[in-house]
Length: 253
Image (cartoon, rainbow, N blue to C red; front, side, top):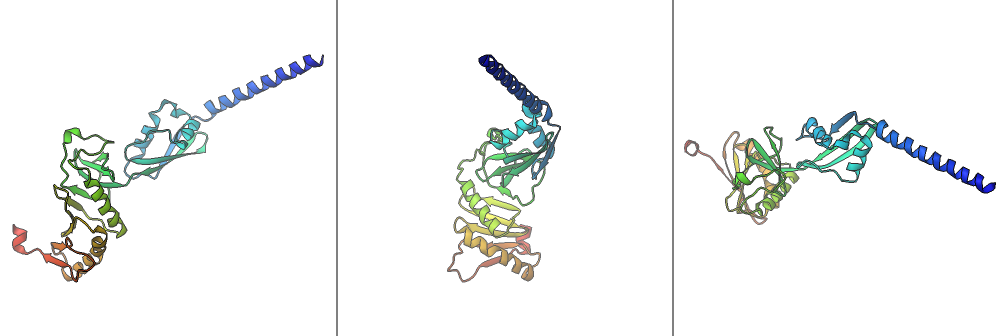
């Protein structure tokens, strides 16, 4: 009698467990339906682009699924995005915080083609991203360009040089409009408005530390004057830095 009663109780417990699991599954499926995706932190990408990317996954209709997918870094990301952080504002509203990659520069290729510090082509856009310089002098086969892949330049060591330059530009709060690399990758030239800065091919940290204060002085002594700032041979032992104003004859040439 006791054995029958015990089996009956076990049967009830199993049934309750099954019903509980079934209810939880139904809640997860129907209670966590994605109705809205809120995007923040994006600068390069539009909100619609991020939302459409997320919704490419047919299972994105479930907000719990999205939470788990991006919490455990299982989701593929757009080429210009470092990470996506997902949280739930409520069971049907997904909050997405975007961390975009730092853009090293851009080149002309069907509008503006932006690339990161590894030289990976990350974004093609007609929009000018503030603070990202135009890079001249990079030679590559346009037919082989592919978003998400390294730009097919002859020597990708140039990206290390550009990344180093960019690091010290940020450190000194400098934003040139253009950066020109020689075809052999030896020298770097910066353009701040009408001022050309010859940086050479080494000692970028100490040379770029001079640029900000000198540009301020040039505004006072040579306002609105084009010219060349010679830092290509500068080092800690240098007594002076030469600035060569551009003459009317040079401008005509």
